[in-house]
Image (tube, rainbow, N blue to C red; front, side, top):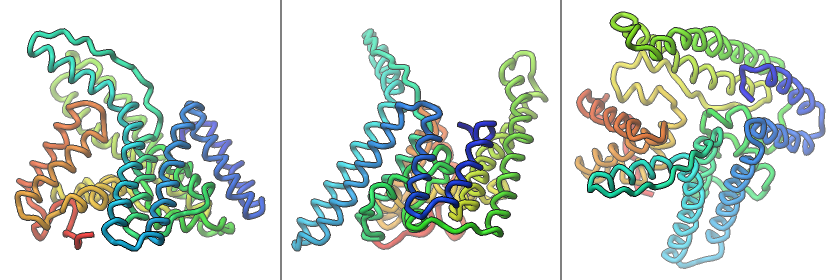
Length: 367
């Protein structure tokens, strides 16, 4: 179910009406059911994947909480906690890899063996990518790390945690929420607030305008030019390329604004995901303003654990390269996306950053 569909325009008012009309416990359960229904409208069987990810990360949180209080030896405790986090990551990322990257791996293997004149003929799986799998996987893994770092206690209520992972406004396109922000808001259903509902409604209208009026209209021209580059060359291609930058921004930003607005009507605040990135004065500033929830996720859960900038200049640039390459791979299962990520890292190094910082800001103390 897309935000810009008749189905959503029917679905959302029904969700709102029952959410605010039902008793508190029933309202939370209703929101969970609605979120799973929203996701299952794309492919019902893939709800099993999000449920599996939910159970794995929920159990890992409980295990981490148990280890925190039951083992006295710091070294053993740290080892067991790391093993728990590793198991959670391996299980979740294995599913993500299979559905998103297995065909890319087969392509690479076929190409590598062809270089030495060996016909491997590795099978292509042609798997339909589950909607939003990268988003909810990262959100769930972020929760695991937060519990590991003792930044939040483990969530003991499975249904509340399942709602955190599957909350429908931001389920398929973000923002990728932090457990410290969203889980706490889901503990108690919010009362209807007319002011917040009005603000959320205006945000949704703005998001629909960006998505339907601007992005979708621009795509008609861009698709036509890109689809027949031999006929439309020169000025047409330049204009289409410039408009494509506007299209992807309005499309993604519009979807994020709709998600933030819908959540606000429900009494829940989500993080901002864009901050006028095309007005940035450097590559580093651009990435701090574009897809903020993803950039900050890589910063907090990958760049800093790798050592950030604390281990010398060479290690800092290596860490940044790893993050940018992974970021490119996250955006698409193709080596061109990996190269795109590496290009941005090189551009950042050449262009410099405010106060000598990269897109991930200052280093933090070792955890």
